[in-house]
Length: 370
Image 1 (cartoon, rainbow, N blue to C red):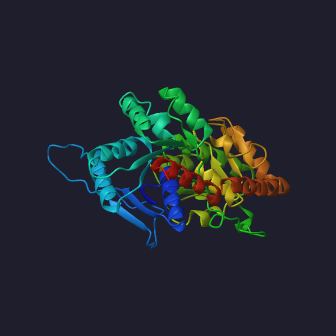
Image 2: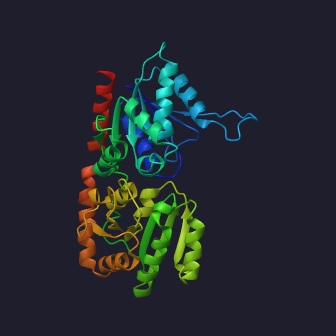
Image 3: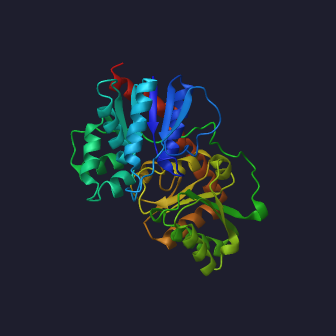
């Protein structure tokens, strides 16, 4: 099949999933075309079955904010017609699914393309429920030929929020490449006997970076530890200031955006994800695949990934003391940590690329009538 994938290129779960999906589809013999305003952060190297099409946004003095959505719709139409795409897979309801529908209307007399929309989280839980976007989000979902959600939680939340019970949302979970994300192996030495706690994200307020620093401060007061923050975003400076205020800045390192996420995770002893909400928790899954137990919050779809008391610990949002105790219980007890590490890796195998990607292939086939 010839598949167009439209996604955000930025450091975050939806872009990562979309890119990894496209790369996996190319390996399986499909032609994949990425469409976005910049190259997705996990799209690198050469693959003759993968192409990237940049959305170019013209400037005009009348527009205080250049209309990216219109430029995206035009690019989608051009790529779909020229490359004879079978499917446009929109990751995020708005503006991507909306633009896919508009592109299909534009090309109606030239070419037909199916539209698959994957809901990732904040497009439903935050943006989509804003009164400014509610109607168009619902419209875009209903006009898609097939809709998927990354967790049971997100499917149910979409039904609840938008009342579109006839949408027929299919749950296809996020996935992980187990060959790329694998444990470091036995006997990995901790530097100076320290424990390494890690968090990876786009550092938006929903990730609760302040809680991460506060949890670490409590852990570090009890045993030698370091905190590594990977990624970048609006709350990075806030987190750094909090580390200064708590006297742990020397033990906290912000390394920015990195490509080798798997390599970074293999240096960690514990992964922190105390989010306000998580539709799935892709970074937690990737940590688990590398054998790193997760300490996070019992919200959204995260309990569908992390088994509380087995592959990690789940607490309540904002309960810094409780989450720190959960972290210390794992880090202080070598046997408990090893059991949680093994359970984490075993749990991750349920979300292997080779298990999940065929579900998308089957859905595409249904949409294009194959």
